[in-house]
Length: 102
Image (cartoon, rainbow, N blue to C red; front, side):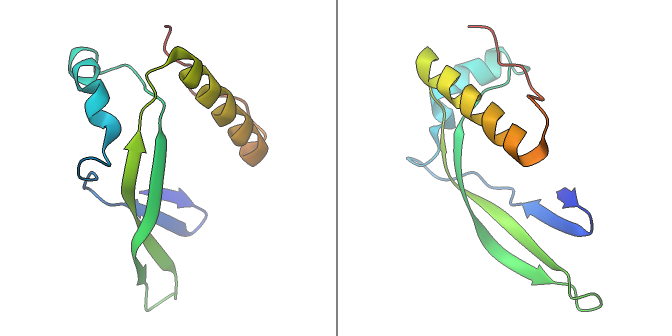
């Protein structure tokens, strides 16, 4: 669950079915090096939105619709650059996670 002030976003506990789950492309890496961090593209939607009757607060549950993991080093570098730029624009801070050495 992610919090921002008094707002919350819940992540649904299921993965997308094949062929929308690109995590299978890195199955061996996940098993053999579970501490490695991988960058990817995720498509999400709100599976449902719950309303707190006392406060009126809305709580969406996010569903992962598609996950794609790049394997090409140039694509990985491009995604890291994009993530850095987007995070900097959103938070004013630079990268929180370092990319895995290739």
